[in-house]
Image 1 (tube, rainbow, N blue to C red):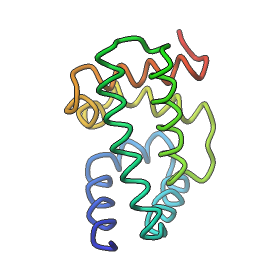
Image 2 (cartoon, helix red, strand yellow):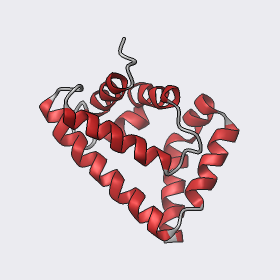
Image 3 (cartoon, rainbow, N blue to C red):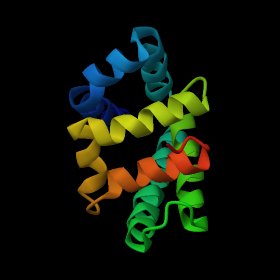
Image 4 (tube, rainbow, N blue to C red):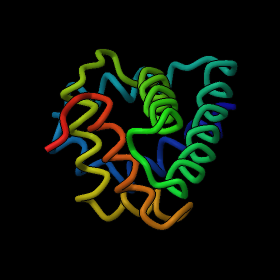
Amino acid sequence: MKVLKRKSYAIMKENYGAQIRKDYGDETIDNSNYKFQSMTKEDYQAFKCLEQEIIELLIEATYIGNPSSPLAKQLVTKHKQWLMYTWNDYTEEAHAGLAEIYITDDSFSHYYNQHIEGGAQFLRDAIMHYLGKET
């Protein structure tokens, strides 16, 4: 399990490290990385299962196309739960900020769009809707 976590950490750091450090600061990211590295085997498995559920919901919800639907709300709720595995402090502002990164940073966009075209934009829109931050 430690090998899987190290591999996941290395991939996340390579793909997203510079951007998230720029947006959230070294201390926040170091704390998040520590929390990730400290996960138990059970927590890591739950984290990965939840990640898969999010992808499945994203595909279905994006296909339907309504970011204010009950399915989109379920997606946003699961996304928040997933973040809590690695975030020490959740705020709606931080969640909304991350949602914006999903559409402005190609590496983040690619992660969601590889599963369904428009997935990153849909996830961003659903998060913004359910956080009451639509513009």
